[in-house]
Structures are given as C-alpha cells and as structure tokens.
Image (tube, rainbow, N blue to C red; front, side):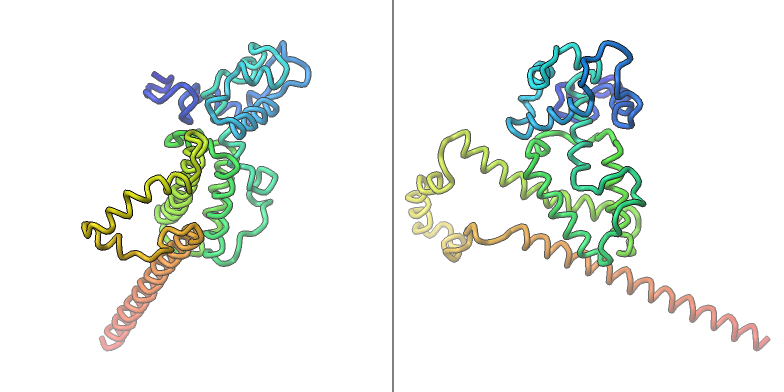
Length: 287
C-alpha cells in the first residue's frame, strides 16, 4: 500500500505511487541536493536526464537505480541520497518530458503569446503531444491517473487554458477539450507504438504479417458472409491515409460547432434580457 493509503503500483509504473511528499519537494526545488556525501558532479538533473535517456532507448523497464549508477559512474547508494526510488524518479521524469516542448522559464507570463485562433492552438497542441509521444514512447506505458503536478505540468496546463480561453466555453468544458485532444493523440500514438513493438517481438514486418492472413481473408470474403467487408475499396486500409489529419480536422470541426452554439445561446440570452428590460421600462413609464 502506498503512503497515501492507496494501493497504486509501487514499481514505478504509475505516477504518484511513491512518497508523494518527497516527489513534490524534488519537483518544486526544495529537495534537490543532499546535505552530505554526494559524489562531485552528481546532481538530480543528471539523474533524471540519464533515466529519460535509458527509457527512451530501452523502455521504462530498463530504468533502475542500479542501471543509472552504471550510466553515471557512481555507487547505487549515492543515487538514493537524491531520489528515494524509481516511483519518485518517474514523477520527475514525467515532469521533465512534459516540459520539453514548452518555452524556457518558469513564469507563463514570459512565454510567447499563443496563436490568436483557438483552432491553431488545438492543432499545435495535438502535433506537439504526438511528437512528444514519438520521442518518449514509454509515456504510453505508465499510469498517469494520479500525476504529481510539478512546474512543467502546471505551466503546460496554464498555457493550454490561455490558448483556449477565446472559445468562450465553461471551465470544465475547456478541461474536457484538452482531455479529448490528448486522448485522441494517445490512441493513435499507442496504435503506432504497439505495431512497432509487434514487429520487434515477432520479427515479422507488417507486410509479412498480413500476407500470412491473405489466403484465409480472401476465402472469407468470397464466402458471402461478410458483404460489407467484401465491398470495401482496395485502398481502405492503405497506409497512405492520414488518420491523424482526418481525426484532428473532425475534432476541430466538432469544437467549432459547440463554440457557435454557445455564441448563439449568449446572443439569444442577451436579446431576451434586453427585451425584458425595455418592456419593464415602458410599463413603468405608463404608470
């Protein structure tokens, strides 16, 4: 059981599964350096950088305190002077990679102004997140349901909300826009990552995999049992079709419809309020 009373994983596969108080101290800069005994040149920043590099190259399972001590040329116990374990280290790794696409600095006020059009902001958010997941595919393997919020996570949320404020939606709806876009991106990224992992694990390319199934699928189509599938065009499953572009455009179109609906509602409410006020004024004047 975790120290907060939950039963979250404690093996570094879920954020917020370690000593939350210690993670927060490290994230917000109040526990960076041990009071005694550090190896010269060893810093928390170097440890997190090395952990991210190992995860990028070999996956999250390869990250361990023993492995990092080898990478950094130090004793394993020296690392524990900086970070309690892998669970807390994961909190730091996540905040590090979430901050990579963001402008430097900790003050959101110092960041460049977001695109004037919220549509462009959503487009940029989606592409930036997809690129981040490509560079760090291990992000798709961790449970972020209870993320310990560090400076980068909060800065990213602040910038996103600022960029979307012109939509004129309620606050919960703005959060839902971000969740919807991120979920869409994660779904496509996970499909691509799973396909690449399948190739590595089986040694079969995608072409070889489907070539093995072709005779069986052709017989199934000729059986008449799957008329809809049999009627599909030859390019239905072509890799040339950009599902990311298609889905993103449809998402933005859906948000446009909602924004237009909200704008119409406000205009209607304003007209109704104005009419009621004028009626009241005329009634008072006649008295």
